[in-house]
Length: 337
Image (cartoon, rainbow, N blue to C red; front, side, top):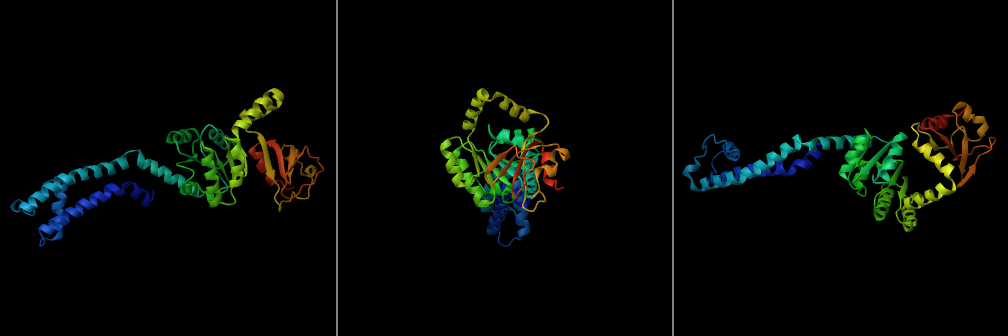
């Protein structure tokens, strides 16, 4: 917990206490200019606290001082009670613990690299979060609804979930956008997603962004704003319903893959320019013998090569597509011999 966070929450009650204390002493100084400050502060303290150790200034013999003391006592008691209550509540109630947790999450997010930022945990976002969590993908979630934030922390133990508006620059910076690999814009409104995409690209021009679009007319606008991928849930839902009739076994195959307890998915691994895989054939890599996977497609220069020939020679920036687990993907990445 930093001093700045504490001060942001306590500056009002603390400032009021200081003002009434020093202001009260200053008033006595005007009435008693020859009295040392220590006695004036002591008189102010016992007046505001209503302790009443004694009349150290003999205010009873001074009408102005008597009226001033009564006003200070009545006005000051209200301020003191409010300030002390506010300070006590801050430390004893959940707010202090909440700020401690928020500060801890900011520190954790600040140490992350190549992670994903999920903005919005609504009807679409919750499924994205679950998939990333199941795939053990590092992520930070930003959600505005406090109830949803608490639910996510309970459902996904250890997850970093920031409360707040994802459109705000500071929230995105707290989530580590400068070092993030990608951002998913899943807010409820297309206009908010559009603003989010523009803001995110300004903060990190190299960020990969995927956004949802409720209206199909927003797809082009979101891509022009900087989104690399735009998905319309309504369009995908319609295609899914049609596929249930036209390709039921394919849909069933994909559904079972997503719902199995063993996390196996259609995954991808890129062939970096410096990799020893460059210039080698798929057959020579022995992917099935060493890892237990078959490469079912290769993405190359914007095209997809399905069921590639085992003799096909790999090139830099090829993307190998296969069915497997995250561990299989890591093993394929490190497979060089």
